[in-house]
Length: 184
Image 1 (spheres, one colour):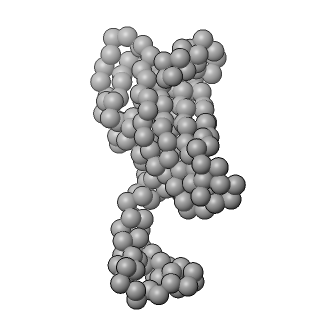
Image 2 (tube, one colour; image 1 turned 90 degrees about the horizontal axis):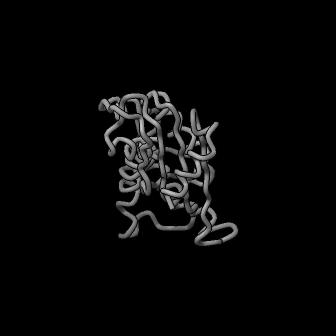
């Protein structure tokens, strides 16, 4: 549960610390806006995808399922600035598939907290394996990190790509190549 009052106080302290006038017209409501925003963008803290991935449908064939280009936004835990991009999830079901929107919700849940891209990739894959009892999963995330774009090395357009393979994807390089070719 987000403590909005502490966020408001912290926002005022930050504004004062950078030399701003917290009573300036444009900043009067900023602490409240930040509290509402943080409640939304950090809503994944303490959450899992168990509930969203519990709605499944029986299938006759356990053929490859790919949900690609799932847009996401997250916050770098090192600087608390955004990183954003696309997630691609491929899995081999074990008799049951999730509704397609459920995979996107899974990405959203794990992205809405202070995060590392590498951990986000693994958490999504682990959730698909655990909650869908999949035979295997492959997750690829491509993201741009504002901590590299607007500060530090200042390299806009630089993308970080992370991958993880579980189950049948770990042993089957041909299956991995098939997924990569279908994503591109």
